[in-house]
Image (cartoon, rainbow, N blue to C red):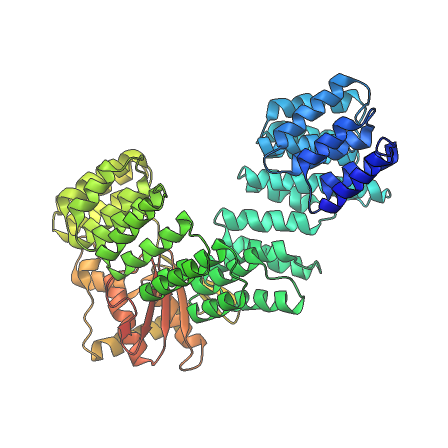
Length: 609
């Protein structure tokens, strides 16, 4: 920038600074180069006696793309229009509309839309695509849909190849914006309907759909679409990989995750902070914390997001000491922690039962200037509750300066279930039923607390309430990946093609467990039924079915990795320890809370979870 200012000084000295071409070039370089100086560009603009449309557009674009200047871009555009000396052209409106999008100023955007029509650009795909994006970013899908339909101008693009390639490309852009818009507002049905009808799809529309499915919990659909994208010979890009990795992570599909990593390396896709962090998160959530650390060490580690990914992964695996060591490394490297960093640290303390350490880190976080979020309080409630400090956990919720949510009360209720505290559990359940009246969690948890204390009348009352409100318990579900294929099992599931072989293996497992002296922990079946029936229910929990399938589908000593949507019960936890010993297998189960690594008859959680 200093060199540019020297050139400017020379032009002033030689009286050339008012030459239109020279002045415009100076403005362009000062506003759009890597070393842009917006204030200097504005001063150059003020010196121009008659700035043309290019000069106005250059500054509007620069202001719109500068993080704290979009409002200035709108004001500058208003000056351009009110001045009346220069009319905006097709390159003016996209930058103005981008400023409206960033600021989510729908009313201003509609006024700009009126000017688009007034100046005759309502048929320009370049302008219309930005207009459409503005409506989408401002959350106005109704006007977006109307504008989208008008843009086709009677052309049935969905059902035939267009001869005008430029027109076709314009419509593809509009379709991409609409698919992204529907995804943003959570209308995946409309997004998929439009996506499937598109005659030609770009990587942008594929990415929008994959990301939409992954972010809204449709993990299998996201992965299925990712496979279909490759079958149609469309190469995934970096954004595609970042979009699909969360779905792979949630399902624990390690082989698919490895393929994505290898694809990025073979195709020389730059593994930046975003992709690198997604890979670290994927390996950690798929049970391979060693590989997660390996990938982390290969990254530049210049961003707190990358550090948070490894800290969160280590915490989930119960490696509290490693979390503290990596946090110390992070501070020594000069990277400032974020509030997410402390969520990982407090979570690690909770999994390890380090109450004093957790209190210390929480206080340190406050002392260095962070305002605790609900997630931090949730970690503290979980930490205190698991350790048996139920009264302190309850008081923390009641006295915290922010409004409590259902998640934090669920943490307290879960702790009450572990410690069989009916009084505080009942209070937590009552609050939960008010905060989330149709969430089955509170009803099931308090019912289980009553059952564990033998109060079957109270159990019957809660279950009758659930029936009256049509509230159903979320079924236990487990996933296991075999040879790149994800297999899903529900409790007492006999729908799998290998159901007969699975049933035989379950019988074999049961016999071997009994021979080792195992007896089913029927207190985990919180229904009033005879002991034989209770043992049968425990026999067919989803994670046991998944393990049985893994045993018949893999060679001896092959590690098994399973993901479960709910917390693993005490009976399954005890069973898995023995199964790992009997079959000489390493069994990794990721439940709703954390990882359990079963090997040689013991678990990495040391029976504290």
